Length: 361
Figure 1 (cartoon, rainbow, N blue to C red):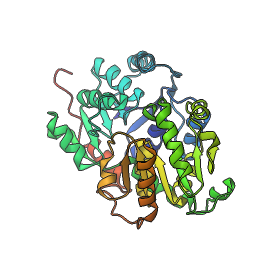
Figure 2 (cartoon, rainbow, N blue to C red):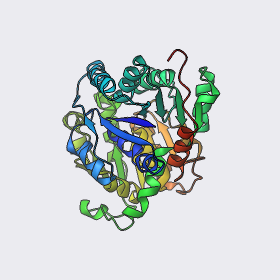
Figure 3 (cartoon, rainbow, N blue to C red):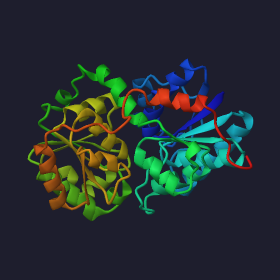
Figure 4 (cartoon, helix red, strand yellow):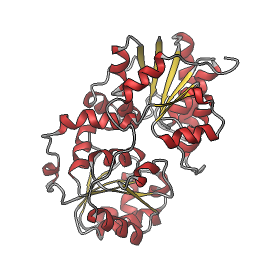
């Protein structure tokens, strides 16, 4: 079996890291096509080295742009690639624009699409990722799901049960496999902080960063946290901070993006995390650090169900109350089902069982 695995952004790199060696060990030839959706070294290259990922067989250099421009450029480049390098199937990962582009290009060439992390739903069509998830799932011949709820979502949307495989959360496996590697990694002291005596923050979603009043409210909550806040800033967010007053907020340490292993260590050592990232919600759940998610909704509802996460809108009082609750929590919860170190193995088993092409393919 020959697969092309599409990646384009930070979450994709993390999710395929456990998968690539498992495919190789099973004798499945899989090569990576990197669209270049994240092309900054801090958001791309360092993740390949941290995660011991094989070099991409193809780098397509799509770059930035509007959602339509980025998706369109990726789709055009991938179509050309798929026509030159015929594969038995194409693997798309998560919900970024590269995921949508890969699913569209492959399906139009009648190449089966395998969606890793299928079935997640926020039920909010204002989220570009929700559109990407919905379309990718409708075009996929095989759905590899991270939660039992994702299975139910797909069944409710009419997906054939034979196409759905509950393999578990591949992001969780990546965390499990890297915890030993960061056992002695002290990133906290590099920033002049003490373990369990700071709040880690990541804010990058347009619903927060592109709304000055929301970003200001988040900054006010940081100022009221009672602990220093370490804030690695996404490249597109940096110019928006000063206008919102966050750069001058007392106790907020603004730093450049950090490498994957360093970020994992910072999450492990934080007293609590404030984020709007889907991946960080899952990673914080795995490392045992309580999380506050500042969004209208989340597709990672399972993290709330197990008690690891709290969902609040971008209101200073609500964020402060949720953070106070997180800091006072026991930091103990049961991990969701199949969030373990066997997700890649279950994925390989599903692939070895055969891919059922969509009708007419």
